Image (cartoon, rainbow, N blue to C red; front, side, top):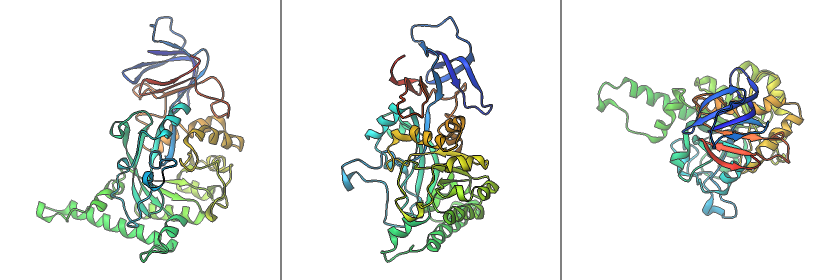
Length: 386
C-alpha cells in the first residue's frame, strides 16, 4: 500500500520535509519514503490530495488505562500506597486497553503513549511505551522505558498522616537515595558472586532497579517546583542515571541552569489550573522558553488530568506562546520517541520503522482540526475524507 501526493514531515535527524512525496507500507512497516508521485500502484493506494503526513503522535506522559471514569475505587489502579518504595510494580499489570481513552487517542492521531504509575510514591514502578491500538496489552507494549520517581507535594501528602515517612522533601529524597544505594550494592554482589550460593537473596524491588542503574531505562522524575527539579537532577547525577524531567512546571524560571545539564523535559499538563502550590509558576510559555535554551522538550496531557484527545490542542497553546510550529511537531513525534528510547520503532517517517502515520488537511494543532487518516502498525484505524 502507498500513501501518495502528500507533504511529508519526516521528522528524521535531518529535519527533512518532502513537499510532494509518497510512503510505501508493507506488513506494518515503512518500506519506502520518496519524492514525487509514482504513477504505478494498486487499488489499495491512498491519494492524500496534497494533505500533510506526520508520524503518529506520541504522548510522553500519561496514566492511560489506569483509571476508569465514573467507576470509583473499583477502577482505580493509578497509585499503590502500601509502601513508599514500590519499583517492583509492573505497569502493564494495571493497564486496561479496553478503556475508552485508547479509542479517543486513536481518533485524535495519537498512536503511542507512555504510561506511568501515579506520583504518590517516591519510587512508584515501571513505565512502558504502548501502542494505542489493540485488545491485549502484551501485544501493544513496545518496551519498558523507565522507572517512575516522584518529588514534591504528592508523596508528602500521601504519607504525612501515616506512621511511616515521608513527610518532608528531605525524606522523599532520602527514600530514593537509600533504595538506589541498596540496588547498587545488590548489583555489585551479583557481579562479584563466583557461585550460585554467593548470590544475594532474590529481592524483586532491587531487581527492578537494576536496568535503571545499567542505564537501560530512564528515570522519569515527577517534579513541578524549581527546587524539586534540581533535586531530581542532583539525584540523577549522583547515581549516573539517564533521566527526564516530567512536568517541569517551573522550568522556564531555571531554563539556563537546566541547559547546562542537557536535561530533557516533558511539559504538561498545559490545559489546567494552578491547582496546587507547587504549580504556582505554571506558564503556557514554558515549552518555548525551555526549547529556546536548547533543551529537548516534549508535550504531554498527563491523561487523565487532561483528556488524551487534547494533546494536539495543548501543543497549539504552546505554539501560541512562542514555540515554533516545527518544534511543536517535534514535541509529539521524534522528541518523545527519543526521550522514551523508542526512536528505533516510531517517531519519524523512515524506512524500517513502524507504519504509525497521521494525515491532516489542516493545521493539526487547531481546535477544529481532525485527522483524515490514522494508521497504526500499517492498519488504518481512522479514515475520513481520503
